[in-house]
Image (cartoon, rainbow, N blue to C red):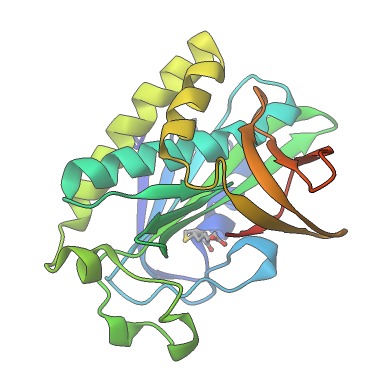
Length: 244
Ligand code: BTN
């Protein structure tokens, strides 16, 4: 991971560049990092606020030989890698909110956006975008985000070394990815569950087809969220926003 790094000052979105590089045949593990994004994208077509030299805005190109249905597992793997990296480089206790948010004290510090290039049901590449709020002050966040988002610096009380955190993310990611390719998702699932906040809690999952409220039971061996509603019926949720 990160043997080829495209480092840019200002880009529209590192995801876009990673898509282009992937089309051009970029090798697995290629990373695009930018100091600033003017058109950072989040999930569900949202914008991702990416001010200059404060956060880590990067996209990673993978070319795993796995069935396309397993691609979401890589989002969960990435979340574990980032949580481990935050644990190693700060005194904080980050937690994962399914599927891809990393929170510190209930506020979001990281988002992950996984996109695919596929040919029918064969994966050409998986492009994993990671946005980590590192050195922003509270004032750097737009007012509407101040309650829900924060930075590691705001929680840790001091500036952090972004290059060091990137290095540790690469190390953690590589170890987990090797484990994933050799042993499958199960060991990653166990790690993921040890960091997840939603398991056992009452949640509401907002999907494109409406919302489901109930108790989060955990994830399946495939990485799909299981929710038990008030009638005891179990729903499998592939993609949603979760409210705790
Ligand atoms: C989310 O929580 O909605 C996902 C946010 C993902 C943001 C990252 S920043 C680097 C990469 N480039 C983008 O445009 N988005 C991702």
